[in-house]
Length: 88
Image (cartoon, rainbow, N blue to C red; front, top):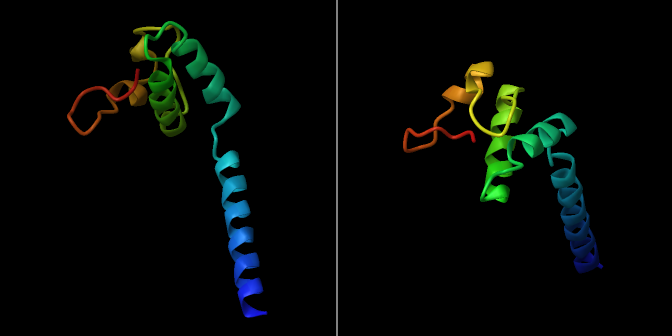
């Protein structure tokens, strides 16, 4: 009987974690703004990933597909571990 409850608990934990990941997928604001920002990117998936990270932290995304970073200083000033701009 004890292995049954252990297995049931494990299944519940896995299902709960999968729902948690779906709720953390990103906001509609960031998804739409990053979709516009990364529309012409050559590596679109990477652009969307980093734009989403930056948007969630800064709550803004510069307009257009390139440049205009002066509109969002937080987005502009975020750096990666190598000291280069993190946000596309």
